[in-house]
Length: 154
Length: 149
Image (cartoon, rainbow over all chains, first blue to last red; front, side, top):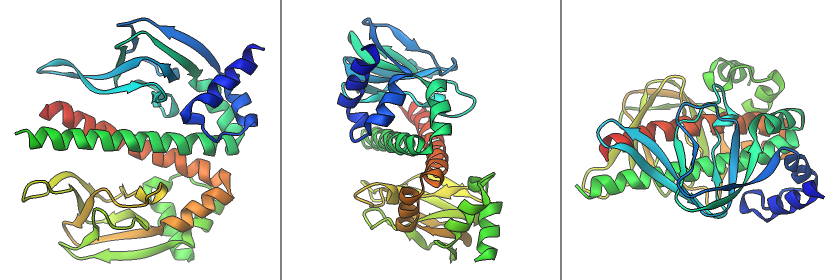
């Protein structure tokens, strides 16, 4: 029952739009629902990246540390978005910190669990990685725009 | 084609890639050459290729909003350039200009997309590599953003 309802939650999230039931079932085996409180540090830069999050509700700030200005929010992630992919590649460490800006509901997915499944089922792996490539590319665009804005404001 | 496969094999991006995948990809590959100052692609144009740089230097420019376009990154030997062919609307978001005489392998984006769709083993391998490259680029850009903010 629990896995079935998780599978439905996964199917409802835009990140997995169009994913087959068979793959969603595999992913659900690595997933759990989590509630994060306001101001909670989800992960810190340099820590082991063990999972990623599909945000169902709420808002999370991604932060990097600036020598001059301390923690700097470089992006916020909200409902329908995905948080974290450092679990995909060695050394499997977070490059950013993440902190909630609102109470947040999310689905946490265990990275190693999913990596193992993707490695043995390349159909799943392809579907998954294609989605991640797209997300990382979107983040790259957003960051690029921010840089343009910084220079424009000068 | 065998020669191209060898060149692909020697490029860092394809390190440890299985032979049969390299064989498949080499059918969409071509050796190309750019003079200093020559454009590899221009922002807004259709993105049909990606490039594995073999030698030389290529600078990436943000769309110009002042009179001078903003250079954000320079790439050289062993690096890879371009992935806008991966997703609709398949258009370049940056402009790339050779800063020196540059040799590269171009790969046909549509061809590679189709091969990935047909063969998910290859698709998985390739997407992993692209995710990694784009993530590194994102990291570099984020650090740059932190510096200039």
